[in-house]
Length: 80
Image (cartoon, rainbow, N blue to C red):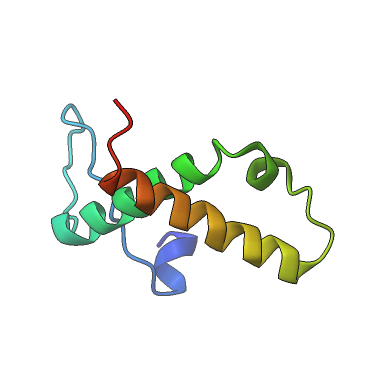
C-alpha cells in the first residue's frame, strides 16, 4: 500500500495509456484539479506573486486578491 493511500488520498491523475495495469481515477475530480493548477499557473505569471515580495501575510493575501480580480476582469474586457 502506498503512503498516499494510507492517509486516505486517491489518485486523480489518469494513468499512461501504455501502462500494463490501468488504475481507475475520478474524471470529474481530475478536471477540477486541472482547473486549479491552471489558475496557479496564471497567478505565477505575476512576478510579485511568484517571488513573494510581500513581507506580511496580509499584503500577500491582498495582492493575491488583486491578481485574481485582474485575471477575472480579463475574461470580460476585450483589449484587442
